[in-house]
Image (cartoon, rainbow over all chains, first blue to last red):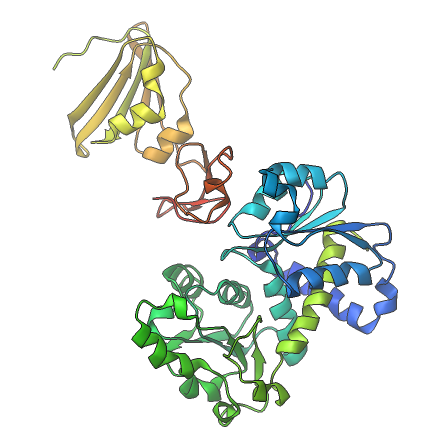
Length: 307
Length: 138
């Protein structure tokens, strides 16, 4: 790979780089006019091989608010992939048209292939169940804005912790900050995988505990990161029926929560957070969506080398 | 068992017992026109048993591959009937085109011409992961 900087996996960013991105995002929020022409004449190509509402529009609005423009496709059927073109060839071709690529692909590793072949920066906008680094950056900016810090807090992760890529990345990213401990709330069947428990938590001596009870964990939490428990993840229908309502957030479940709790969710939600919770000031998930745009603006600036 | 003495060639020694044929295939020794001998289950002081490959020619060897199979393997270079060099392959940082990713959701499963590449992520436990999808090599 050449000197061109890509973002494929959140772990390739140092804590200092993440802090710098957050700092830029905060400055964009404070002084949007200062950034409105930064990418004038630059083009972002959004190569989305599968549908996505939030992520694609977030990238596109980020580039537009930087004064740049956007080209791309929003499903594989409307691209040359439908004719059998490889990701490598597509990356080489798009490098002739655009200045930066944001790619979503259902297959794991596709953005890495693009990065190895493109002559412009590539951002992984989600590759199957593998990585989604800009979601993690979004989560980190949200936590920072809600708490004013990224360390010294108890983070609860709730729901599907086995298959939820956003949870794994968040645990990896937050583990790098001092004084963070985790409460992992899930049914037995959906606990975090061994590699997260061993390679991240145990390897770095990060305090954590696992529980099946959201209510029991609630009073300790500063952050609650909700994910969806999906029916198809369960082998036994009986287990799904037994457990599904346990992880639906309703106003009554917040009775014992801290006043300063922040509830995050990568969205889309289906039924795991009741609409009634939206009015609670502790619900951050829509503010989180907005933060996604700001952090993507900061990332585009960084990867393009725009000061 | 008697195997002819090598004059100019290579002896790949201390191969873990039972993995000699695997290495024979990886190194594509079947494509050589010179004499090649695979000795299985030879007595070994260190391991009890070992496999040995003798190649009656000096060829370019993929040392990354040897190190991946087992860093305990040794390579003797023989010239004029005498050992002139003893080499110790190391566990490689990256291994290309030898092992294949088994993750059905990996891009390599669909884009057949992509080279399968694995990188060493844990030297102590000898863990290699696919550079595309991070799946652990088995």
